Structures are given as structure tokens and as C-alpha cells.
Image (cartoon, rainbow, N blue to C red; front, side, top):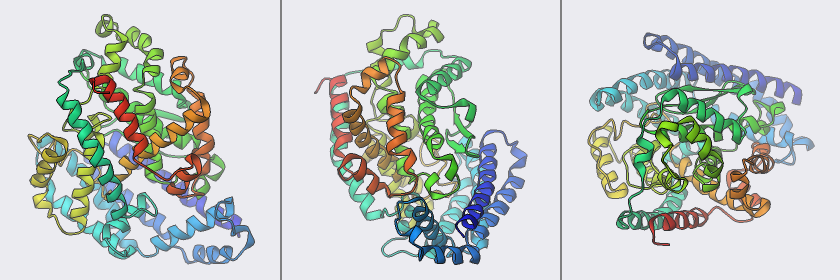
Length: 499
């Protein structure tokens, strides 16, 4: 019976990987006129996958296995499979197949409408799509059921066990200490040499250098690739097929390069999951917050560190010799760590990033709970940005239209970014306690000790524990905002002269 369950799950994963490949192609290579047919393809696959995940036979197998001794330990391979597949089965059986198909169809159509709307700064044209998407997500929440808030039902899809109120408390504590730090940075009047990143960095050389860095930290390009899209992401189309994407601007080195490191961090997690359990819970990531901890760790804690640039600045100067021949290492390290309130989340710095997430969490929760109408979103967004981030968007393209998540129906996703930053700092502290001076290792080009530690303590775990259980097990402490705040205070206090 276990073998039957495993075969069924692997075949379902095969369909899901095809769905993932079509989704990747939709954002990278699909011709504009192909959008309508792609929406039908994705809707069809979503329906087929849903039917397999809710098949009565699957429920019978799981019920019988739950009574077996082999499933008694939820952290064993069998116990993990049974517990997590049961959880998924119980959630998915609450959704009508036609709703699943409609969600997939509208997500694809809405994505194409969003691309056009963002380009044209046309929120009014996109508004009906967002209203339709929001309605579908509310219907999903009602089908799942919830105790306190419909937002809980959607958040649980990305961060199992998390609640809106719990996330709100964590983000509230973070805001209380982060906002004053950002004000200190602004009030310091110290100006970082950010213009260094705005020199001419030819796109073909950015790709060359980005691939060099991604490979150096451990990303296996024999099992992955890097392409260009409007909104960077990492997707997987199979156990040895991980797709990274980024975007390039000739006069913004950081946008392309740090998107590559960020997505490579996701890719390293995917490549570190046990292949033999692909499609089954022991071979799947724990949560999006844990996934995000890996991307933010490699992007920020590694890629913006002085140790990293002691290793990579000379090669970077070699690739971009016209732009960087006269630049000193200290100035470059300050430039890549510059902090200032900004409009665009994906281009924001390590200190202000979580303020962008707090805005999105509060707005999307308000929309799901019915406290904010879609028609009022642009004004609410601008007010929240002025109050929380300290800037006011000049248009909707740089405001409420900037992210792909809501057009895609990913309500409940945004908080996982901040959770990822918190997890990353706490994991990194423990890795350093276990391994020694990580900065010195990076300076020597040694990234495998950290990657090996992550493989052992995080990647190989699969879904055997929850995110909160993993943090407690790895670090001996519950999740806290303090490790991240200590790191931010030390870094930016030194850079901006108030340490």
C-alpha cells in the first residue's frame, strides 16, 4: 500500500512538474498571443492534479496507513508522508474541482492583464481582474474554513500553522525596532556612494558574472539554468531541473546581480532536497518562509558581506573594468549595502525591505477581510507607503501594480518574505557558532561549509517538522526578531556612523 501511495504521489508530481514548466515558460518565452491557450492548459492541468490529490482511493490508503506502526512517528519517512499527504488531502477535498480550474485560468489571464497594466500605468484597466481574483481567493478561504480570519486559511497554504494574528504580532515587533533604525540612517546625513552601481554594466557581462557567482556558491547549472523575465523567480520542473530568472538594467548592477543570488538561494534549497523523495513530503520544502530564508541568506548575509566581496571584487573589476577600475573595495561594499527609503520592494535594501512587506501584509489582509475595497487600493497603498516606508509613489506602476503576487492570486504569500529574513538571521548565527568565522571562509572562496551545514540541518529535513519546530531544533530558541535586528544595527550603525 505504501508503494501504491508513493507511485500515486510521484505521478501527481509528474503532472505538477509539467504545470511548473508551463508556468515558467509563460513568464519567460510565451508569445503574447499565446496567453489565452496557456490559461486553458494550466486550468486543465490544475483540474487533473486536484482530482488526483482528492481521489477517494488516496483517502482510503491514507486512512489505513495512519493506523499502521510505520506511520506512528510523524518525523519518519512513512510518518511524514502520511501526515503531510493527509493534511493536503483534507484541504484539497474541500475545494470543488471547478473552483480549482477557475483559479488557475484566472491567474494566468490576470497575469497577462497585469503585465499590460503595469506597463501602461493602468490600474483602472486591471481593477476588474484583481476584483475577480480576490473573489476567488475569498471563495477558497470559505471552502477551507477558518476559526478567526479568512486570511488564516490562505496563509496556511504557504506557512502551515501560521495565523494572521501571529504574523501580525511578529511584524509589529519588527516594525517597532526597524522603523527607528531606518530613521537613524536617514537622519545620519551620511551619503553612500550608490552612484557606483549606476555606471554602465553591459547586460551580457552581468549575466556572465552572475552565473560565475551563482556557481561559486554551489548552484549546479547542469541541473538548472538562468533566464530573463519581468519579475525574477525560481521554479522547478523536476528533480534535476531548477529554473532561475532575473532581469537586467545596464545602469543598475544590484538589480540583476542580487536577484540572481536571491533566486540561486531558492535554487540551492531545491537542489538540496532528497531526489529519492521527489513529489513526496520528505522531499519537499517545509514552508515558503523557510524557502525564503535560504534566498535572503545567500543574497544578503553572504552576498552583501565584506568577506564575499573580498573574494569577488577583483573578478568583478575584471569583468566590468571600464566601470570599476577606479573603485575601492570599501566604497563598493558601502554601495551594495546602501540604505534609503525607496519605492520598489525588489530593489529595496536590507534595512527597509521588511517595511515594504508590512505594507503588503496589512493591505492584503484588509482586502481579504473586506475592510478595503479594490477600488480604494491605490490611495491606501500610497498612504501606507508615506507613513511606513517614508516615500510616496508617483504612479501606480511603482505603487500597487509593482508585484506579480496579487495578479497571480497569491494572497497570504507576502508575510513569508519577512519570516524568511527572521529565519535566515537566526540560522546564520547558529551556522557561524557551529562552523566558525564565515566571513573569513567567504573571503577565501569557501562557500561549501555553509552550504553543507544548510544541506544537513535544513534541506534534508523535507517536511518532517514545521517551520517553528525547525527553528527550535536547529537553534535551540523559538523564532525571534532579535537576531535580525542585532545584525542590522551592527551593519548600518557602522556604515552610517551611529554604532
